[in-house]
Image (cartoon, rainbow, N blue to C red; front, top):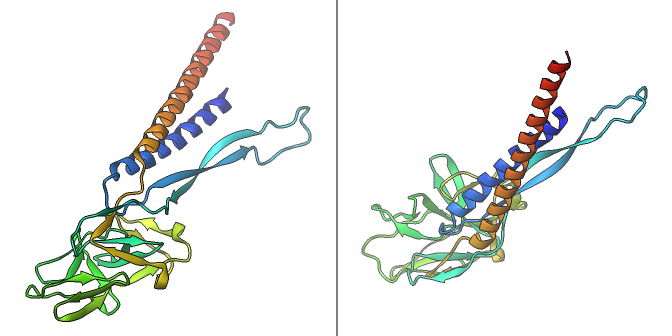
Length: 246
């Protein structure tokens, strides 16, 4: 009976973790360039040790282990905005930005200029060009961003956005603010990364699917809770009957 309770608790912990992932996806449905995540589980069988002296073989119990989350790398829908500072990334590329914690990476192409004329993201992080931050004077006009990331004004080329890729994008970790950190060095995107000026890549989270997953998780959690409650009632009944016999 205790084994059944442990298995039930294991399931509930896993379902709670999945619920957190779904909730984060739903909270970022409208976040520019956001990539949804899905959780990955693995079966863990117990016991791992056995003995030959028992009359019956050890019964293998199946637990659930959280193996982490998987990043959904599917392209999000492209929406035209007409803003020359907006860029939608196509392909597996990321923009490199400088933050207080060091270099980070994002798909958020809603760019703007700060009071000093530095090209930044909507959160104020300086976007990195191939030669460092890109500066644009307030007097410059005719700003355009080419498909290869070249930033130009009426005074000529002002820089080129640094687009990067990673050998294994699944190793990217969310760092808050729609930013990613990488344990591996970034590589130049080359022809793998292209930009569409005057547009934004929206979140690739599909609300209908996430709502369906949410209902499934809630239903499963309720079923496990009901099972644990029934097991607790059975244990209480058994204890009372043993006390009556005594």
